[in-house]
Image 1 (cartoon, helix red, strand yellow):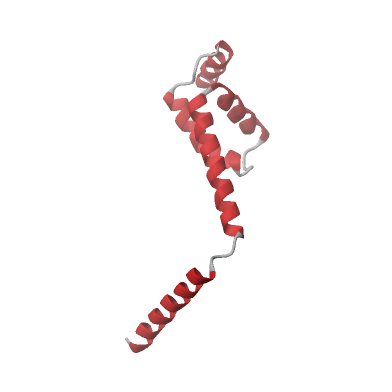
Image 2 (tube, rainbow, N blue to C red; image 1 turned 60 degrees about the vertical axis):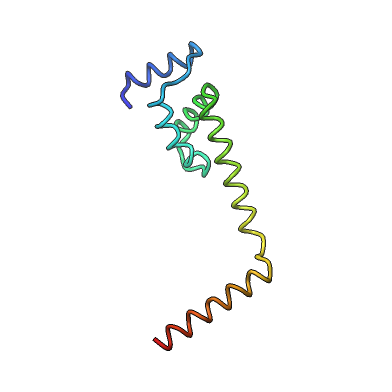
Length: 101
């Protein structure tokens, strides 16, 4: 993004004009890093400003944040015993086939 693009975006934000699709595409790439706290302070501030002015990107951000939270929670829960047993049986079957092959 050029300095002129940043100036245009800043002006658009100040005027309350929604960012264009190209701006959104760039910010959507940053949102993943934003969620993982992998951006520097300036980029975090820019993402926050964009999310404050762009409802479609805010909705995508909320969805990604929710999915990330559900996955994190799911990873902490143990698998049901019936599923664990089916996986063990499948692994044994593959091991037998490999040893016979």
